[in-house]
Length: 464
Image 1 (cartoon, rainbow, N blue to C red):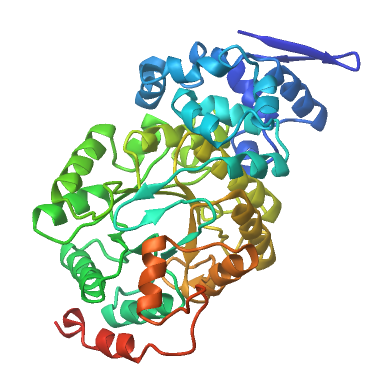
Image 2: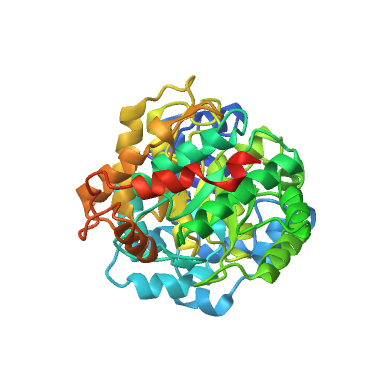
């Protein structure tokens, strides 16, 4: 179906809805690498005019990725909740933007609407929004999840403690874990990106994390971010698996490049549920995504990278995850060139994920060859904090020595909490107070962690 519009006597024509979406997107290097970005600012604005007049329900009849060729498209179409969609089914994309910014679209209404929205719908409306619009609407969304603590409550901010080490050295990881705990980080998860795929090494990492959590009775969860097939093997071997991690993408072909299918994720989800390791809930999947992954796998079908990203959230939504994290600047400047593009992408991802009912967090990050710096990350950090992000990363010194990229530090989380009055997960906040790591107001207390330090040095896992 061809789409046409005229602006200032200049006619514009687009081959299909897929091209309208791509051309309407804010400029980013990945779409130009794919040769689908707007040729001029005038063409971009024309595409946005067309998009604004497009009915939301058009996305249910005109698939951007063919239904017959893609299991993510089938999941989106076959699983669509028509009853939940009904309140906005009569709207165009432009009307939907206006409704989202209105007082009618409160937290209750947005929560009820989430199952009825397709990823392409939320991607489309994001393309018509300024950064402040993305913040304002996302802030009204509330997505709360639970495993051993409660994440995503309004007015709260959680942190993934990320104690990576380039050789998976247990002592180095233990030191970083202690550093993070003493800085009040770790309520989202203590999550390690392993350097090795060895099941023995992965098992040792899991056992050490579990020993720390059990010994100190920390209301949090652990995760070793290895491939889902490794996690399945570890669970079968009796390793203490809390969360199941996997990177996912927005097309079947992208996920196959990751070695993943919905059937495999179904199996892993069921296996982890059977372990019954949660105490306050059973949300136990942890997904990571990032704009550009579909294009880098030559699996984007000509769809713009931000829409591909939103489609990944449809797969995540199937499993009611504890955490989903957009690793926004990690993929590099080929896809998000500079700080401006990274900031925009981070706000888009959070907005789209929250509208779809997902517990979105963000790795506010960049690689050293991108045209970005820590000032850009500070800007995105504050914007996401204002928008109600569920969690961010806590990396020692903000410099990940294993993955070789720049993220956010334990101190960045302290800054955001203090500046915006944000609390930690309530169970974790109470634990910090019991351990005298924080005072009654949630602020870091004077050094009083000798007990924690002494007990950490006696971990069995460090002496095996």
